[in-house]
Length: 150
Ligand code: CA2
Image (cartoon, rainbow, N blue to C red):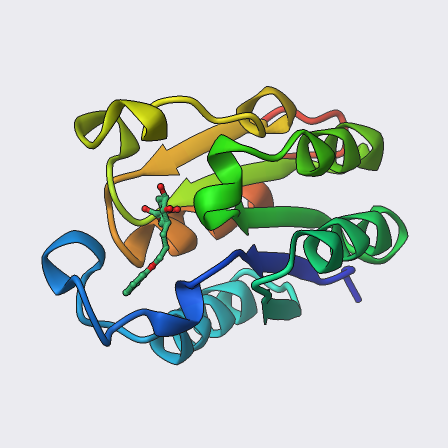
């Protein structure tokens, strides 16, 4: 059996569906998890879906993924724009990573235009809401061992 895809969610994403629906949509994080589990199963991958408000915990999960996961999908929340620690963990990880954002960070405040973690990502999907997570699973599933999407 394939190793699981890790889907890691950063700070405040546990609040999804409760506020700012015009920015983040109406789906809860549990709804996103259900979507991801369904799509991953269709593509033959187990899924490990997690959320944390703590940078160190996210770093530890990225380190764990290095051996345990076939790839990482990450919405680092606001840590996207601040965390060199998460970038370093992802660079050390060596498995493919797709960065996801629900909103289009480039149409928002200037401080959201920079992502520290994109340097470690094979690709970035933003602006498609929860669908972006499913697209990221498809992209990882299409990425072979040499790291080339086909
Ligand atoms: O668009 C995204 O997915 C973000 O990663 C979401 C982060 C934000 O800091 C990034 O710039 C873009 C914020 C997640 C907080 O989500 C909430 C959802 C509902 C209510 C409050 C916060």
